[in-house]
Each structure stands twice: as C-alpha cells, then as structure tokens.
Length: 125
Image 1 (cartoon, rainbow, N blue to C red):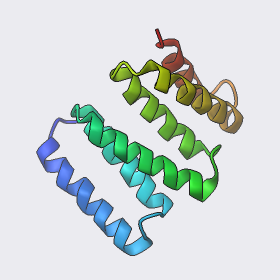
Image 2 (cartoon, helix red, strand yellow):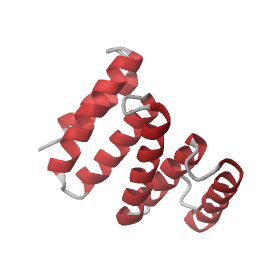
Image 3 (cartoon, rainbow, N blue to C red):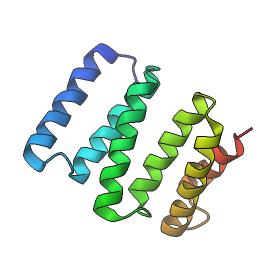
Image 4 (cartoon, rainbow, N blue to C red):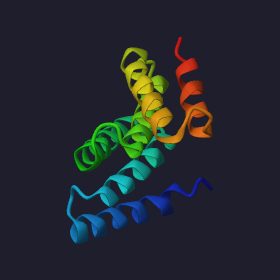
C-alpha cells in the first residue's frame, strides 16, 4: 500500500515458499497467500501474473472448502475485478454474480462485503 513494491515482492514470494514447503502446495493458507500476491500484482498492473495466481487460489479454496465457501467468493470477486480492468466484462459478470450469491448466503444481505459485490456488479457496462 505504500508503493514499496521492490521490498514487498520478495517477502510475498518467500512467504509463499515457506507455506508451500511446510503445508503443501494445495493448503488453504497457500491459497490466501496466492490471493494476496495476486492483489499485489494487480496493483502493479501485472494482470497476467495476477490472473494465474487468483485462478490457483480459487482452485485450492474450491477443492478444500467447496465452490460456495466465503474465501472462494472473495477470490471470485477479485478475479472479476481484474477482468473488469481488462474490459473482459463477459468473463467478469458470472463471477461477480456467483461471488454475490456466496457473500449473501454466508454474511447476510446487509453486510458491507455484499454491498461491495453489488457495487462491482453495478460497474458492469
């Protein structure tokens, strides 16, 4: 968040290496780290890298907890936001709708995260 990308990237990568070694490459903690690294790459404009990491994190969370788990919903929203930035609205919309459904079911209709999903969906052209 401070723009110290050169300092942050090696820390993210080292953390990921440790988690993968200690917990295995398909552990939910690895997925959380992948999601965070993907957000970092998205902030830097490295969208291809971010997309791959979001997809891997999503796959781990869906396999670990099922496709309707809250973490999967968060990752779906992140991936959809990335698609929106790229103008890939046809890919973003179904992800946003699924994320909204997950968040509403898990958190209730008045939760701020639900509002964020609604806002992201409203940004679709």
